[in-house]
Length: 631
Ligand SMILES: [Zn+2]
Image 1: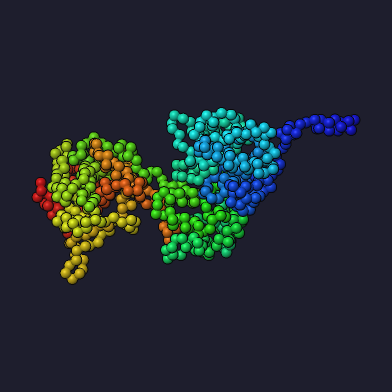
Image 2 (image 1 turned 30 degrees about the horizontal axis):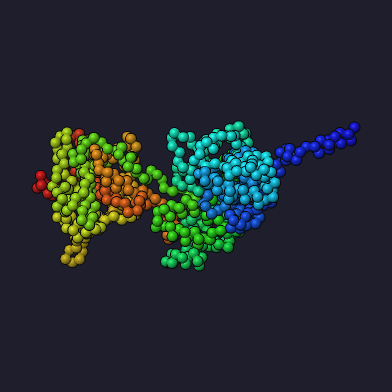
């Protein structure tokens, strides 16, 4: 009886077609990296190192790839530099699922053309090169088109994020989103392409989504997704002291006196300095440190000896961050060279920060858009003083044959109103607008004069000094600097006959321009209810608006220290920013007068508070007398 049964089973087995047997095949107990080491073959066209895939070449990719074969993980986010092998890791996941755990799959790229190119140049050659994958190709060549592969046990679709029709059709189990930060911004009328694609996974309990990209900004998709994940970083031990750390650009060092940038690259002058012991980690030691690396979530802890505590394994959404310092194909000097080459050009530097350091670029709040600044317009005409203003200051930007002037009114809590913004052609015009014109408050008829004008002395310096000497209590020469330890500092220009400083003479004010631009930016973006509101008069010129919005804040990296800091730069090279400069000087003027001391009760009692200047010689009485001469 038993024999009959076995005989029958054997017969049945023989009549099951191979296709069905293949379909019923259970996945082997194997990870993506094990599968890739066994079955993936790289071709010479797309790979720098053709031949059999070797995970030990890029040990950090093991954790990334194996997250895919972990049944507990649903989402994988990879925020990575461009030369670390992230695309190959994704191809390995794709190869693994085709061979081991098939299911309908969609791969989304920024545009349809990118999708076709990846299908033709990457995925199809990968399938053809590896016997383990080739056996899943269909018999009929019609079953393979550029955007759709009907393989033996699954369908693989490719789509551009710009074609909603391709994203929204059939159900899928696996979703690959490549270069997500390059997806065109969707307009409000259409659906978000990423949402549209992930809607299709709803029916699968064992779905998986892989998102890969170099970052762009903090508002970009990949950075936001990484923040949502368990945020893993790759810790490596120092070959000298054995203490664990992540690789960061600030620790790449090179001889600071070396002026020849090319030489740093060709002679490999850069090294990595261990943040614990300060010893040099050389390029040849990279393989040693990488093979001993560990992925550690921000929610777990790793001490300097590599002991991990906390929950480092269980997470449905694993996020991985890899910068180009981990790449086995780049030396420390390659990275230092790329930085030095890029540092003076915004576009290149942006690319360095995004594609090499895998860090997001500037915070958009540091950029003021013309549409936004127009919301600050109030209904009062240019040249009249609204209620609330207690003091006027002015800023003058000096050009070769003309000037840009801004007059600003100040009230309690540094609330500020633009009173005038204009161009003047001569010094006579400047003096007339600043010191010989009274500005009237509509409600009371009260006349206001400019209490302090800050005039840029970086250009036509002698003329500026002459004017400031003539109007010594009302005008100060100023000079812009980057990053002073204090907002402004004073140096005395005039000397007494013995060569000592003449304290009653002319003083030059050195301004920390970044500080005042930050201040303006804060005031412009003040929350409702915040006292330091920023107002514009009705119908400011387009020129004023454009120039006011001409700069944004970027991350700049110090060549010597490798540390990053933020700096204001023109958005478009060659654009004009004269009105912005004039605003900086007017705001500095308010700071010099200490308008932040203005108090509300003094308006109500009619006792307008007169801020006291720092130095005795600038007597306010004298200044007021001076003004009255012209009224
Ligand atoms: Zn060390």
